[in-house]
Amino acid sequence: MRRLFITALLLLTSLSWSVVCTFATSTALAQTPNDDGWDDEGDAAEGGDDEGDDGWDDEDKTPAKKPAKKPPRKPAEEPAEEPAEEPAEKPADDDGWGDEEDEAAPAPTPAEPTPDEGGGDDGWGDEKEEAAPAEPTPDEGGGDDGWGDEEEAAPAPAQPAPNEGGEGDEWGDDSAKPAEPTSEPEPAPEPEPAPEPEPEPEPEPEPEPEPEPEPLPDPPDDLPPGGKLAFTAGALLERGEFTAAEAKASLATVTPGGEVDGQVQLARLRLRQGRVREALQAARAAISKGETHAPARLLLVRLMAAQGESVDPQVSVVERLTQRFPDDLGLAIALGETQIAAKRNTDAMKTARAILKRAETSVTAMKILARAYYATGNDSTTESILERAVTIEEDAEACHLMSQVFMKRKDIVQARVWLDRAIAADPNYIEALNNLGVAFIQMRDFPAALGVLPRVTRLAPGFGASWLNLGIAQRGAKRFTEAENSWKEVLKVEPRMSEAWFNLGVLYLENELPGIAKEVRLNQAIDAFNRYRHGARMRGDVDKSLDDYIAEAKRLIDQQKKIKERALKKPKAGSGDDDWGDDGGGDDGGDDGGDAEGGDDDWGDDEGGDDDGGDDDDW
Image (spheres, rainbow, N blue to C red):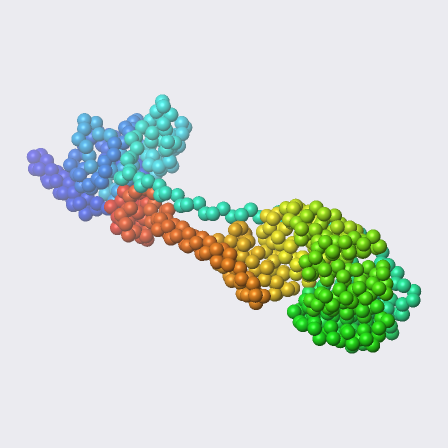
């Protein structure tokens, strides 16, 4: 009997040593879901050692990183059968709770079990193979804490009650003390300076209502067929119907009796379209077919003056014609207009007086005489002559000339009165409509100006002065983009009108434009001022105030560059920092020295460097 006892003791000792060796070489095996790592499930059922000790004295085999106290759980009243052994798929070194090291206590607190993906053997050899793993039983009271660490075989233990203060975090672990962060979070970066606000989009202007066109006047009966076509072309041109006017004028040039008048209407059409060279060609074509045609002579001289060509040769030509045809009053009027264009004002006065001797009530001769005196600066005589002319006939040009006298005197009210009279006599009088818009601008009544000037640009799109004044009115109404477009249109129809460059320079210097950066806009201002300076020098004008404008633009550009430099020196928010203040530096995949391939849990509590394919607890 004694021998049998000694033999059994030796067998038990050998078996124990075998188990110890097996455990010593299997420290990385994962625990099963129904095992908490303390080996107290089987002991409680079989009546082994105390709950707090498994008899192996190996609780400190795996060092804990940060032991955290866990809330006590009530042990199951009846332990369920142990699940069958299954091979572990992925070993887990750490369950994330820091409970591997046993604290000496009279009644140790069971740690939360770590979920095992494979449900394999825990290395203790205490599972019962004949028992199948049971499905987890959810707690009726909502005891699942969302961690997946409840015992599957036994009924889930009751969750601790939440604090009375309502401080539960909805994870079911409210009784546990929350872990403190490894370091203080870094302060939030200073906000970047707010960018300059974009200018509000300008409201779309309401389209000006189109006036109902009046019926076309009937041509005089005594005109030849070509003359009637030319007359109709002129009427269409006054209404701004350029396509129909061109068709009628072109047809008149090939119809008997309309060869000269048709070319004159084509020249007027091209002038309103801003095609001055073609207008000159049409006027010369008209002269070649009728050298004594007074309207053609008058139009040719005005076109040559507008192009900057010398009209002195034309004075000699017309003088010879008047000597050949002394009774032709039309040629005498053409001679007076040519002399005014050539700035021979004294000769123009003599010609006008000679006409008045032959026709005392000739309003046309009075207008030539008044213009000659106006050019010499004799405004009083000009006014008296025009007053006599309008008493004979409410002539639109005479009223317009009177308005110029008052505009020169800065009497805007009286000027507007005479402009209204001129427009009443001829609603499509281009120069009178343009100057009425100028009067409104000088009165700072920009809406009223915007009610007149678009009509001028529609009737004569090639009239650069109307586009220039329209841009001024639009800028006054804070419609900056439209003003820019209007001044650019000036440079298309009349490139030598350098005043448009000056207005563009002031616009770019002082006003925000959508879609244009400030520094770019200021550089455009400098370029515009330089272009205006070049045009002024071509005319012999020198404007020293341009230096002040350009200097101001350069100062603002330097200021803008300094603002950008200061903005670049400020650190960008969020670059390389996860706002937890736990960065170890140098890691691309996390912030605490973990593996850059995704082995880091982004919480900064891992030892780092593990590439075990997901054995980290992700917390």
